[in-house]
Length: 354
Ligand SMILES: Cc1ncc(COP(=O)(O)O)c(C=O)c1O
Image 1: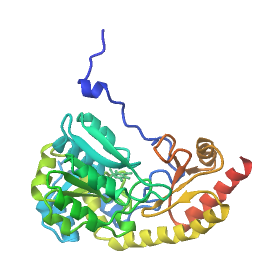
Image 2 (image 1 turned 45 degrees about the vertical axis):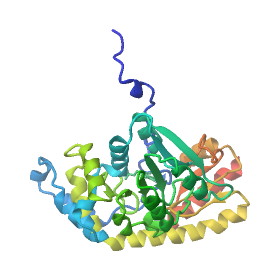
Image 3 (image 1 turned 45 degrees about the horizontal axis):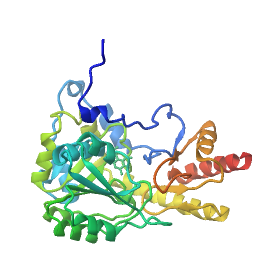
Image 4 (image 1 turned 90 degrees about the vertical axis):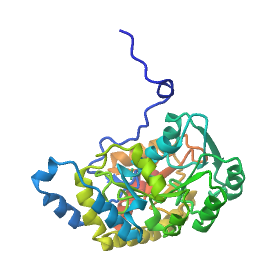
């Protein structure tokens, strides 16, 4: 029997795969996750969930109100998604179309491009600068003149950590009302840079947030899109009615009720970064660390060899092999001080045997 083909756009795609298998029990410095766990209140809240709620489709309104309260906005500005990835997918499905353009600086988060390809969009890229990866503001401003359908800005950028001035983003959105400017603020807690709440006056500006990184709920999958009610409602048109699960909703309330937990984690990551950076500098190896809970390091040995050697010693980091401008580097998430001390010990062992 011949294989039934999917649509021509899907036949041209490759599945987006990330090295997610076999990570339990290891020091996870490979996905920029929270490495110490969520608030104990989250665990309590999930344990306390009545079995009746396992069998019910979840309710969303109260959580939209609650997150709106956190940001000081009305619930109509808030959409809930299966992780920020769910929101990204919805953005492209709702606003992308065959032959239209999405503009983005690269290298950046890897899920934008496959979502664009699913819609048959043209991906126009502008390179971050070298050697310190500044955002290519001038080139992006110039390309905006051609009225792309979407501009994706990751702020701070994963994996370069590059910070973009929120005032500039807002000015670009105001000057280009036919482009939806999407600001992926997944790592905003580490820099404080945000276009919220002023973004809400700009109908073509949309902000993405998530409870995956600082709040430690990556497994539960809860992302937010915050913007004008008209844009949020269009994203909901292409989202299933129960795409965010009930455990995530329960966990989100508990996480949002414990902002001190996130604050303490962000502070700990800052201290760990301050501990590690001078040690990297002393090696003389090229490295780069800006916004976000991650850094780039260009090791002496082949990055894949280093990654494998670290894995054998219980530490996971991410090779950037094949990424534009980053070939030869590894991305290392920053966890707690103790975790970075362990990383450093293991890294030195690997460097010594190479
Ligand atoms: C910039 C950026 N956006 C979105 C995501 C996806 O996050 P979520 O777990 O909320 O789907 C990630 C995850 O690594 C990310 O780095």
